[in-house]
Image (tube, rainbow, N blue to C red; front, side):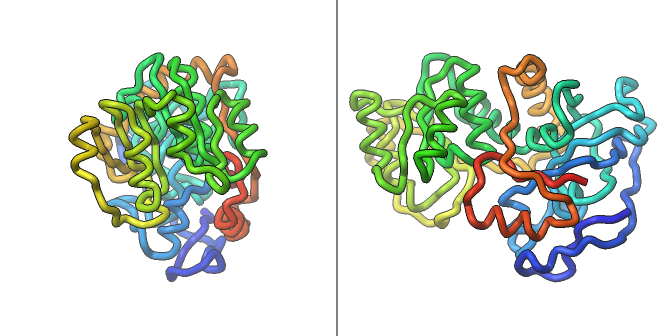
Length: 326
């Protein structure tokens, strides 16, 4: 098969579309013909040598995909059949013509969605679901601040929180991105380039603060995030784009009874990912099927042009997911 290979860490130019050995199917796995995958920030880090795949995972980039089942392992549930359209979160291997992964991580791709749309779902919506509901314990009627509202996870989080009956505030870098966040269900819009989000949150909530914050930025936002939380508020840390070192006001944490959590998705066990996939599927698949939820795609590149797609992500211009079509 062909795949995007990284023979030495570096910039986008190190991504090469080359022949390589195909995956070996294990009894608990599905072998799938990849029709589309998507670009994630973790792919950029792995390409540069900073984010190695978990032990035993494929070294090929790609943390999600949509495609058609070629073969189901002997131990797989009988509901998975050759020719069936599926989508899944991967530990690696998505930037390839074929991939094998645990069947318990598969979700059926709704008939009304394309392969490109399916590839834009797993990482973004699983990450958003995990941090909103498992880590953040978001309830109907509560308020959530989603940073980077125009990112893949951001656009997913806005929609999931809206469907759960929460009020959503977002930060983004432009009026255009904020307007598109509004169309997805956000009501409090903050341009982080011209406004201080902690002030705007207090303004939107009459001084109370929000119940939950999803943060990808890290160090630079840490103090203002804590200042933006309501009593018993929760901060979930998803990324650290601005760094991983910050000062913590313990007094504020104690007075406001705050909870700070951090998580990653890729390194979780097969069982943890399976349980999360099952929960997301139950909540989201009917909503994808009837249009209440939709993956947001900014641009589609041929898989062989993964280098161009990585360069584009590094410009931070995208709204929603960047997809690679196989």
